[in-house]
Length: 186
Image (cartoon, rainbow, N blue to C red):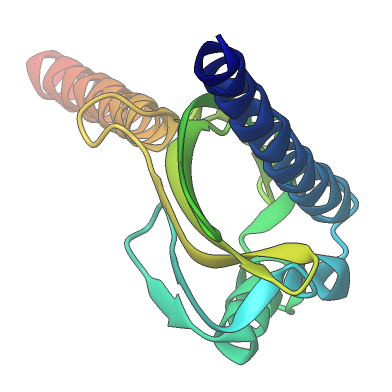
C-alpha cells in the first residue's frame, strides 16, 4: 500500500515541477511579446542568450544579440527601414520540455505595416528553443517562417504587378487607337 501511495505522488511531484517550469516559460513569452510590441529592442534582447540564433521570415539568419539589433535597426528604425510597425500575439501549439531546455512551436499571429502603408497579416509559424539560465528562461534559437506559396507579400506583389501591367496595357491601347484613328482620317 505504501508503494502504491508513493507511486501516486511521483506524477504529482513531476507535474508540480513542470508547472513551475511552464510558468517561467510563460513569463518569458509575456516579456518578449510586451517588448516586441512596444518596439523595445533592448527589452527584446534581454530575453536572448549571448549566442542566440534567429532566422527571420526573409531567410536572413542572425547570430548573437548584436546582429539581431542591427537587423531590427535596418528593418524597423533605420533611415531606409521597410517596416513601420509590427505586432504579434503568439499562440503556442506545442511544447516539449527536457530539463532545463524547452522547444515551443506555434503561430506568431504577426501583423506588419510597411512604410508604404501596405497592411500585411503574416500568421507566421515559429519554433523557439529556450534554456533555463539560473532562475530565468532565455531564447537560444528562434526560427520564424511564412508560407512560401501563399503569403501577403506575394499577394501584394501580384496585385501591384497586375495594376502596372493593366495600366500599361490600357495606355498602349489608347495610344494605339489614337494613332490608328489619326492615320485613317489622314
